[in-house]
Amino acid sequence: MDPFSDEKVIDAWSRNASQWTDAVRGRHIESRERVTNRAIVDAVLGYSPQSVLDVGCGEGWLVRALSERVNTVVGVDAIPSLIERARAAGAGDYRQATYEEIALGAVDGTFDVVVCNFSLIGRTSVEQLFSAIPSLLSPQGVLIVQTLHPASSCGDLPYQDGWREGSWAGFGAGFTDPAPWYFRTLGSWVALFRESRFQLFDMREPIHPTTCKPASVIFIAGLARTSLPG
Image 1 (cartoon, one colour):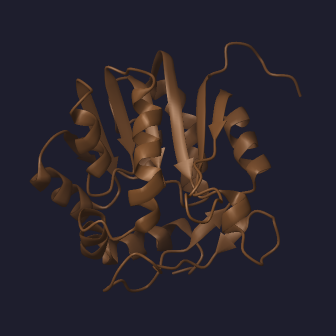
Image 2 (cartoon, rainbow, N blue to C red; image 1 turned 30 degrees about the vertical axis):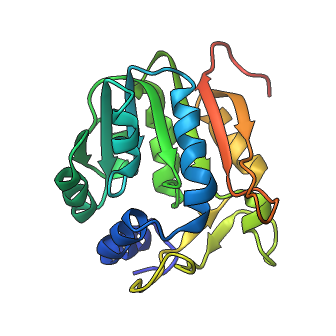
Image 3 (cartoon, one colour; image 1 turned 135 degrees about the vertical axis):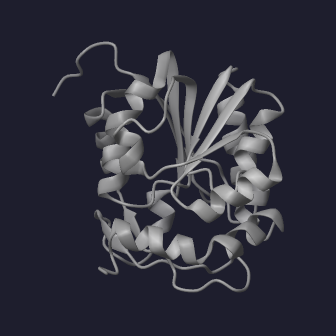
């Protein structure tokens, strides 16, 4: 198996589903607890949706949080063991499907918000998913993506697209075999939205209160109503 591939991402997350569930439910991830969890909940609820699709829902924390305020919340994830854990915790409708399967129509219906919270890790699978999301949005629906901020996650490596080695540092004990991830520059993220028929409405940079640096970046986009120049 190629150590830098979408296939390896799925393999690594499958191996660490239990550890991830413990880390999230045990509140071991400091940046999420202090900044990014609230940032994504506020971003979604700011659009007063009646229906939400959480793509890459993991063990289901965001679905559970949104279900308190949203009529219909569906979570979908590629990892069967994460979906099992999400269902066991209750609240929400959970389905197992890869991003490639979603691109082929595995999820029915349309939603007021499609949200991807730190779940766009791969390369080709993410690009395929983006091409399918327009068909999952209601006419006035929005796509909300929270991901690592390119400026703060680049490290000492060149600021250019490419696969990076993963790390479970700061997530708690028991993790093995870190999942690789595909780094995109800010410009590449913007281009991905544009090429997938989206128009960016907003870009937010939640700031960590201690480091005073971006803990993430949140993109909010809707379907482009006219052809964009260029």
